[in-house]
Amino acid sequence: MNTSTSYNVSPFTSAVVSSMRRLYPESLADKSFDNTGFLVQAPFLPARPRNRNSVLLTVDLTRAVADEAIENGASVVVAYHPIIFRGLKSITTDDTQQLSMTLLLAHGISVYCPHTAVDTVPDGMADWLCDIVTGKTDVPEDHAYTATYSSSVPSETEVTTTDEDDDANEDSDAAQSHASTKPTSPSAADHDDPFTSTDTPKPNKKLRLFRPHSHRTYSKPTYPRPTEDFQPAVLPHSRSVITPSPRGALDEANRFVASDTDIYHPNNTGAGRLIEFAEPQPLTVLITRIAHAIGLPKGFAIAVPQGKTLEEIAIASVATCPGSGGSVVRGCRADLVFTGELSHHEALAVTERGGCVISLFHTNSERGYLWTVMREKLENEVRDEWARVRSEEGAKIGLDGEIKEMLQDESVEVVVSERDRDPYGIVVLEETAVEGVRIGSGSSG
Image 1 (cartoon, rainbow, N blue to C red):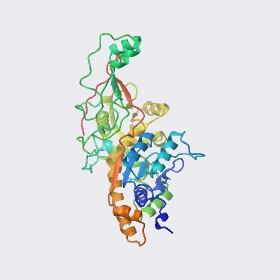
Image 2 (image 1 turned 180 degrees about the vertical axis):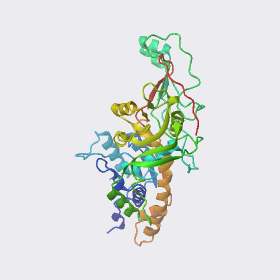
Image 3 (image 1 turned 30 degrees about the vertical axis):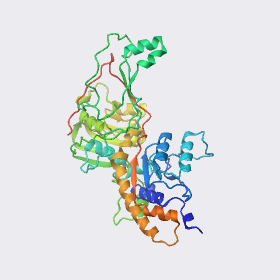
Image 4 (image 1 turned 60 degrees about the vertical axis):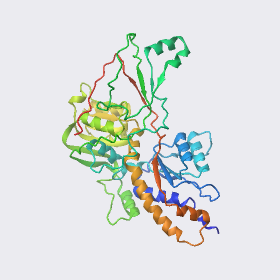
């Protein structure tokens, strides 16, 4: 029998999957609802052109991300959110997600989805959200993947219009030509004030009652990366797990990684984290830290108790959960809930008891982790695993030429998608009759 047929997937793909399972054991995922693991397996076909030893990280596997993987010749897409969540009765090109899967398979690209396994582990996504507000001592030295937006990101998504444009729009569709476009960049301006611009235009004299003033800036769906020049001091604090992983899951994960000592414990592994500061911290300071950690967007949602101002609020405790955190933080009465999204009633329940909420949009509470933690961690793990595979498999006799060629390639690359994005952006009304509150950058602590 041909030796190459013993590989269901390419040796490099197997090395990537093994590495992901060691870093984020599948037993730690919440199997009550989640669908994690090696979900799309592209068979290794020696007759087809060989893919590069490259891994593409993304939160959502959209058609744009699938095209990116194909264009770059990746072998594996690690998609944080599962591309398959429920059972399939057919696979057709009518469904956008299924189309992406079929295109990837046609180009020999596999998909691994870790989701809640990434949330729960120590130094996982929930801990990363904690590190944003508390500061982190071991800041990565390599900032090559931070603070700039790719030129492949469309610039047409930020549009500024004037009242003259609006007046013309009312009379003729030809006024479309008056709109101007410009790119957005988190490093394009002075960031002393992360939420306001120093060049806000003077109010237009043609403002009309009950009409939104029309200098509008659309903050395109964001691609969060931390700013590279902001490294705040570490705030003294304690940290605990809100909902520890089940004992059986912890034991299985520890058996799988086969370490001399157990890595996963109830006090460091599970859903959500609770931070308790040694001294209460000004909310404005935490806002500034969060803003820098996600690349200084045009803004994000914050809920505070009625009658309170941002400047007078001090935070003694913070609950963190990536994505939709409502079910995780519900019983945790922290001063601040820091998550991707809460429902209306969940947020109202927090503010009614005197707490605050910061929500970044679902995936903006997740995507920065790929840049700041997962990319480097996975690349190092895959590099070691691929060296081991090349050594062991390369010593075997009777390997096909295609397998030999692959095993001779020592290269390993892990990159973060330039096209992965949250579907939501923010329209900022820079001229409006509604008064806002300007806050400064605060102290880095």
